[in-house]
Image 1 (cartoon, rainbow, N blue to C red):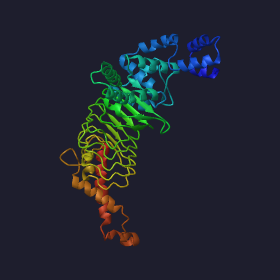
Image 2: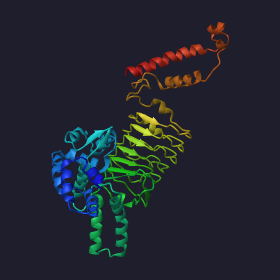
Image 3: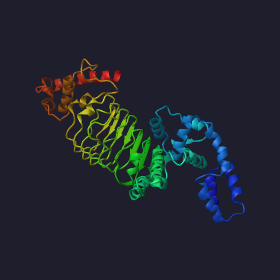
Image 4: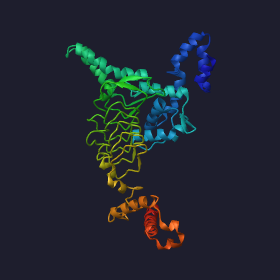
Length: 413
C-alpha cells in the first residue's frame, strides 16, 4: 500500500505531506478506500495549490490542457499537436503548458503528474451543470449512450403530455448536446460494447475517437461540427447520408466495414486527410468533388477496391495517395498522370505545365517499353552495336534527354 501511495504522490512533496496527515491512525482498508476515491478527485488542499497554475492559463491553453488531461496523456506530442490544431482551428502552442509545468515531454510523449491529470478531469466534469463536455471513461460513455434507449422506452409507456416524461427528454437533450468530445481508445479488442444511437443527437461534437469498441444500434447522423474523427473498425457500410460538415479536417477509419464511403457528393470543404487503410469491403472511392482541400488519401490494404472515382484526379491539393496492397484495382483514371506535384502542375502546356498530356503519356509508355527487358542485337554482337538496327539506343537517348529535362524543371521548382 505504501508503494501505491508513493506512486500516486509521484514525487510531489505537498501530496506526500497531505496524504500522510490523512492516513494517520487509519487502517489499511481505510487507506485503500481513500486512494480509490482520491485517485479520481485529489484532496481539496492539493487541488487549491495546483489550480493556481491552471488559472493563470489563457482560455485556449486551458481547453488544450483539459483535452490532454482527459484524452492524450502518454500520446505522441506531434500527433496531439495536429489533433488539437484541427479541433481548435488555431495555432497550438504547447510550450505555454510546458513553461507552466502542467505537462512535460519525455521520448516525444506527453507526461502529466497524476494529480494534475485528476484535477483537469475534475475541472472538465464540473465545467457545465448536469453535463460533461468530455467523455473518456467507459462507464460514463455507456451511461450517456444508453440513455437515449432508456428515455425512448420510458416515453413510449408514458403519456405525451406527462410532465415527468417531458422533463426526462429535456434532461437527455441537455446532456447529449453538451458533449463536445468522446475518446475510448482501448488496447484490447472486444473490451467494450456500446449502442450508437445517441451519437446522432450529439450536435456539438468536435472530437470523436473509438478503437476496439463494438457497436449496436443505428447511426442516423453525425455532428456537423466534428473536426477530427478516428474510428477504428467503423461498423457501418457508409457514413450517414445526411452528414455534412464545414469543419471536418481528418477522417480516420482504418479497417472499416464500408462498401462505399458516402453516397453521391458529400460536402466536406475542410477535409484534408482521409484514411481507410485495410477496409477490405470497400469497392470504390467516393466522389471527391465536395472535398477540394483533400491532401492525403490512404487506401493501403483495401483488397476489395476495384476502381478510383475520376474525381480523385481533379483534387488540386492532393500530395499523398497510398494504394499499396490494392491488388484488385482495375480502374484508374487516365488523368491521374496529371495530378499536382508539390502544389504545381507540370503537365498540360499552356496551363503552367512544361509538357502536354500526350507528351507525358509518351514518356510513360517509353519508360515501360525500354525497361521491359528487350533484346538488342548489339548486346550479342558488340562490333555492330553502332548500327542500332532496332532503334533502341536512339529511343533510350531521346527518352533520357526528355525525362531529364522534365525532372530538372520539377526539382528547380
